[in-house]
Length: 161
Image (tube, rainbow, N blue to C red; front, side, top):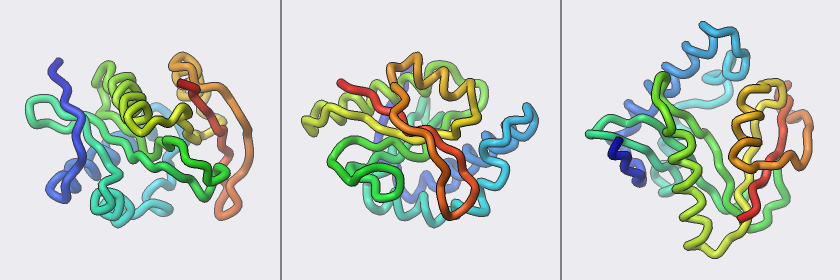
């Protein structure tokens, strides 16, 4: 396992989008409703914009993209706009191991370099497995709510460094 964490480029866009599609298909197969309507609410333009803003990172091994994450430093939708590290669009290729934890460790490094002591994220509140994973990484539950634009029941989680 020789994972490389790097900023994504526009040349990665097709691979990133196919990774997301693979994860959506897998979730449907195992009856996880988290991303049932994902592409109705998130277009490929979102990833393109995140890449152009140098906010999207990928994990690769031997040139194959295994995961990705968007990192922002403010969140106007779910949080209070305070300067912290916000994880968005975290996704790993189906069947890979330890890619998610590798991404979290790399995000911690970015937070330390930026001298920020909180990593925040939101996730679907009804996906109990995902919430347990974030708990195991040390993300504590801060708030649960419903997003107003469409029915999305979320948990806000925070990791103190």
